[in-house]
Length: 284
Image (cartoon, rainbow, N blue to C red; front, side, top):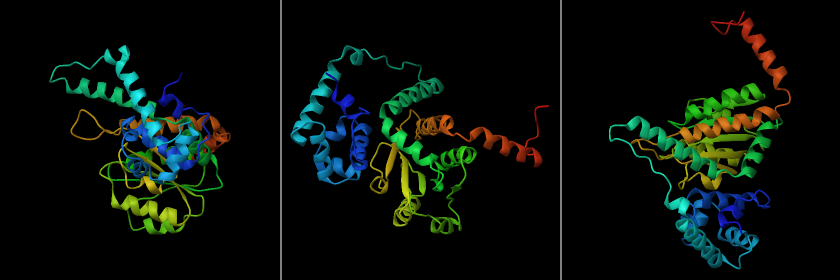
């Protein structure tokens, strides 16, 4: 019989957007987030208590208490697993900070892979490939490079992609948001008030908000239509955005084969770059 974690991540599950938020919240700290009061899980997911009740019944449980019993059984099975008990740990010298950090990054990437919901990826790719709607990218103090990196690739893949930058033109850009436009918002702890204002404005203008964030309780979760979360803890004193960058590159890789007009678009862009002598070195 599949584990409960396998059941809740089964791509065949027909989930509503709100129910997917609950699954995301559960996976962020599995199984801990599901072992407390229902109201706490609802708050973390940014949904109402009835949404959780509907989800657990859809999963085949009589109620939330029975669902929690299954979570406890799943946790007990994992703790008894020899593969878990014998899981290798990173051993290194105290002064081997470089190697320890890289080893920790590998573990974070594996955790990021386990957090991925295929349905979330499919929805996000479909939204981004729909050129009827504009795409806007926003990042915080440290995460702005992720927004810029993704934006530069999106501009190669499709038209209608813009930056939302922290400057005097930000209100002008937000005013141009139309219904069903897509706002890709990067915000990791410590969460920024400006990001919350951007998300609130986008929702008020009926745009869709995709939140790239950490696995904790971001205040923006409630406003997001789709959440892509990643661990940020590292062996350093500072949070790591390595998993988040990997998610951005995985998204680009997922979009590329489905961009039917990509060859013609890239050829045209390269021709214009040659006219402008963009690159110092060119193949002869």
